[in-house]
Amino acid sequence: MTDQTEEQTAPVTAGEDSGTTVQLTDKNVEETTKKLENMTTSFSIWPPSQRTRDAVIKRLIETLSDKSVLSDRYGVIPSDEAAGVARSIEEEAFSAVPASAADGNDGIEILQSYSKEISRRMLDLVKSRSVESVNNGATVDATTDDGSKDEESSTAEA
Image 1 (spheres, rainbow, N blue to C red):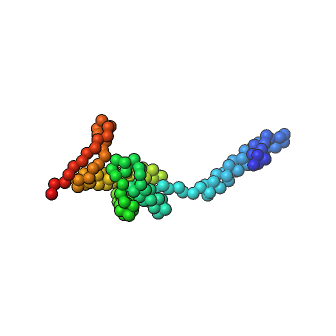
Image 2: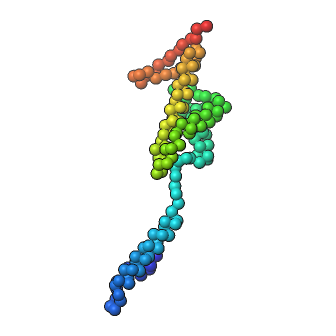
Image 3: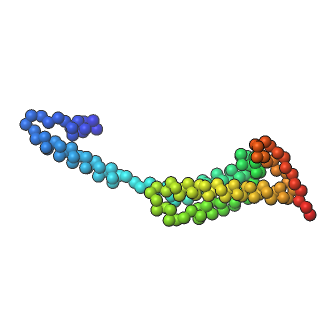
């Protein structure tokens, strides 16, 4: 490759037409540009592939059913229930994102919207389950506004 560059930009020797050397260089640049344009593939983030969506669902299941910061605060959801809920969260989030937004250049904004939608729905779910468990008489380990731990327990009235 170094040899080609040297040939293209070699100084003009006595008796050579300098215009010819410039034309050869411009021609080589054009050919290279055309080759690169043909090689360039389109890269799009949105919509995500089914493989990516499945990975999101798998990660949601893990987050909801395994020990995590979220489960420390709101409790763990059984794996079988977490699987159904995770699929539902992902499908709803995917559907909630407007299809017209996919017309953007690279889909970054739409992907961010999708991600935020998943996070919001997941938090809504765990918070609602936490409230339900408190209302049903379970003890919940919650953090107070000042950041300290506070044991809350409530009994359901019959």
